[in-house]
Every structure is written in C-alpha cells, then in structure tokens.
Amino acid sequence: MALTTPERDQVHRAFMRINTEACAVVKSIIRTAVDNADDWAESAAASVPATSYNAALNVTFRTNATANQKSLLLALVCWLRAGRPLSEGL
Amino acid sequence: MYFLQLAFDASNLEWACWQFRVPADYASGLTLKCVFKMTSATTGNVILVGRVAAFTSNTDTTDFDAKVFGTANTSAATAVPGTTAGKLGEISITLTNDDSLAAGDFAVIYVARDGASGSDTAAGDLELTGAAITYTTT
Image (cartoon, rainbow over all chains, first blue to last red; front, top):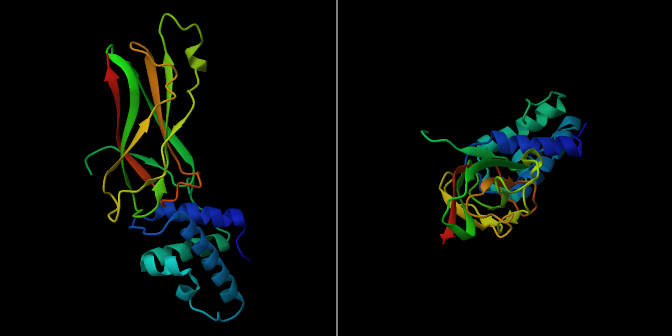
C-alpha cells in the first residue's frame, strides 16, 4: 500500500537528516522524489514496472542526486512501506 | 572536526539562545551576525530569525521567568554559501525589534532557522558555527 502523506513527509525529513553528501536540489525537489519513489514502488509491487526506478524520479533529482542518495531514498520508502518505524528524531 | 556547531533542522523551526550583560557603551544598531555552513545543501535559500529579550535589573518589575522574546527579526531568504557544502557563509540580521535594549540590561539573544518556512528551500541541516552581536557605541 502506498505511503500516506505524513509518511512521505517523514521520509522527506529523514532523507535530509541522514544524507551527508552534497545535495544540489532544494527541499521541494526531494519531496517530489519521495512521491516518485513511492509511486514507483507501488507500481513495482503490482507488476513489472514500465519504467526503471531511475527514470521514475523527477528529472532534477535524477540528474543531480548521487547513486547513494537515490538508494537512500528508495531504502527509506521501502522501510516505511514495510511498516517499520524510523528511529526517534527521524 | 575541532570546533563546535549547532545543527538546525531543514523541516522545523529550531532555535538556541545566549545571555549576557549589555556593554556600557551600547547605543543602538543592534545587529546579529550568524556564521553558518550547510551539511549537504549546495543550492537553495535559508531563513534565520533573531529575537531579543531585554531586562533592566533593579528596574523592571516583571518576573523574568515569564519574560518572552520581542517580535521576531527575520532575515531575507539567503542563498546557501554555494557549490561546496561546508563553505562558510554569513547572514546579518538587523535586530530592529530589540525589546528596548539598553546599556547595562541583561539580554538574551535568540537565533533560529525557520526550516518550516516555505521560503527556506535548502535541504539538510544548517550548521551554526558562530554568532556575534555588533552595535554602535556611545
């Protein structure tokens, strides 16, 4: 099941708190990328997705984020989709 | 890293404060200079807020425990230092709302990053490495 808006907001906050690599995108772009990642995970859960994870990300995030940052984003989305809590402070 | 810094969140308003006795030569022009860097952001803007609580000892009759800060002084949305995360930048906030601060007062200065503001667009923590007060002397 797709994340709720508060859960997506939580992923957004957690990403910004955990990430330490240089980040050349603003908050709103990251928040949109959270939507993109969760939507992609939702589609991938039902059937083979039509697009790759990378292609599902908004172009600004896709072209500026590192591979580690994209992995971190997907990991956080999947962690919450699995019903797992984030640590206190995240 | 051999220095102290305060991390201010990107999603919430977080603040810290310091207290001191206002120097005897203070006249006007209270200004807060904040030196900062970003943990990761190399683009976007940040918003800092300065507030003042001033108390004249032996004169003011209110309970200092109940003292509230004066009206907020908010910086312009200011671009982060640039293409290198960790590069130092400085934001100057004119503390126009100075709670009638005067020489000899006991003062508390508040500094915050308003990460919840829609105009604060930079991702990740802001790291406050230093803050200073400047003013015009008598």
